[in-house]
Image (cartoon, rainbow, N blue to C red; front, side, top):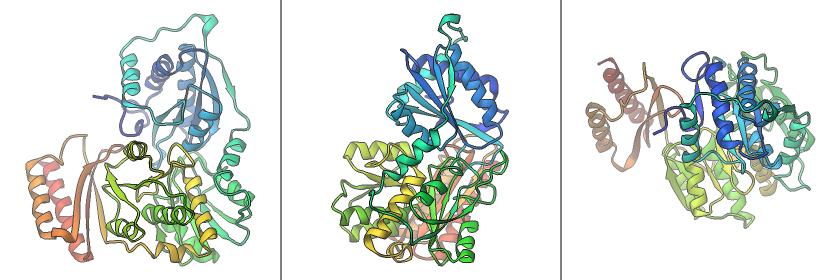
Length: 444
């Protein structure tokens, strides 16, 4: 049982719970004790939140107290840290980010030396060290910190290397929305260096505007900008750059399921598809049916990229992802990477000599209503008898025409209520009913 780590590191509101300078300092020390053994080093990157400066210093102090050397990357995407951890032959990588959350939140994510998320046993070992008092190593063994000045350049070159060296995007006009987050200084550069005409949105972070009205969590800005600019398509990232959504030329949102389909189809035609595509419980039925028409296998896991990656490794698959735009191209990266995923989609468009409009239209999406019900505290509302009875009743009425999913968020105090089916009005009615039952149980 983990006390601090959630499904994707540690996350919360700045100044509350674990997201305080004193806890993060001790977390750095504990992580250094577990991950920094030997003469290695640990990389630290961060997104653009104002609190990132504070937590960067706290982690640096904790790691140094454990005798671990530190390399500071500055603003860097989560997948960028994973990549650089491998290329630097570092013991581990740490990212200070709350991903798609507002600036008032922050969190800590970890990567192993291989650029993978930490396994449960390592997270438990770090938690065990957190229960001990800090003991600083001898002064002669304290860790030293250095800043990596060319981190962005290294990552940009890696991103470009994930598509054929002969391919360019000179005939494409793209709106690129960086959510005022970690991709602001990398994504536009990657695409411009590949020849695209780039219209920049959300590339002026001030510490407070990350994800605010822009990015993959607010794609309306992207879709409107594509129409206003007469662009071929739009690309939107989240705050730490591990997610991507797109807009077609008409301003229609293209979600993670559709993007994953485009990549899978391109891999299939190129003879490079391997294994089944891995989705989650939130993946749309229309996406599953579209893959079936291509005779590509599909399987669902629990929500969360760690579960997708576990399944991909177990089946030797290469593609998986979520509707939110967290896409794993395991033949290119070790984790979800918004920039790399976007490049795979653009490469597919070029390779198949078509448009995003046409490719995304091959996925007929079922109406899917998602309602987030906020909890006053983390507790098991979904397992209550009244909630389960309501779910069973709706499932009986839907039959084989749809699906119901209630789950607790792994990163926020929310219950996510999802109903999917062939009839929009019916799906909406059922979702609102179930959300009402959840609210009643919270109040009770």
